[in-house]
Length: 308
Ligand code: DON
Image (cartoon, rainbow, N blue to C red; front, side, top):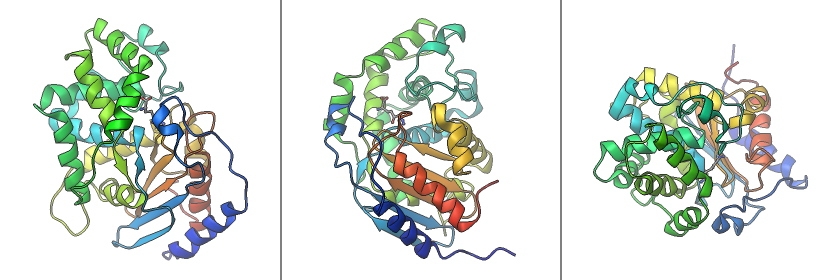
């Protein structure tokens, strides 16, 4: 028989264990605005299906969620275009870095999955086609699932990314040459750079991601944001593609669906149990938070359960 673990005792232990170890990894610097984030920030927040909250450290500080936003934009695109999305973006792991261009040539401009940049840019294109103000639509979706209308874009980070977004420009232009981008390149990138600049805390992320643990609904609410089938698909994609060329390693070590961002955040979901977010800015060579991955490995080891 499985009993509910004492999450706060486990989180305290994780905080203690890592406080004694030197930090490894490097804070993302290819977006200059991210390079200045203090490297020793460390926070974690776990939100359960019973509505309980457990946390430590800098869990209430907002940070740049970067590619974690791809889960929100994908959710919104699935709501508006449904299964038609899959004719424009595939659902296979890429085994390549997040910003790779190489597979697109052989695969006729169809990205491997919605979490690599190419796939997220097609998703952004779908949102630009679907909404007269896609940036506002994405914020509305987030405000509804978090109940917090103060969550917003960081214009400085969005501008910093635009000024250095050569690869993302290349990806959109290349996919447009195959006919897989409907809108103007600038419009698609404007949404993409803004979604990456969204600022949220571990607490807010864990609370927002509870819909992926709870079949698409908020706790204690009749309102279903996503269907059970959509949540199944999003969690499957997080499991197989959420960490790019480190998706296998994350599954192997942590055993939960999750999504990382180069701001140092990682969110993971234990379906029907909890959503958890962790933040530590230094990244490993694959671009995922080094300490974040290690902390989540400790979480599933110390609780004694993962999805496997
Ligand atoms: O496209 C980019 O370069 C970033 N703004 C987002 C990248 C990101 O977070 C990749 N994930 N770990």
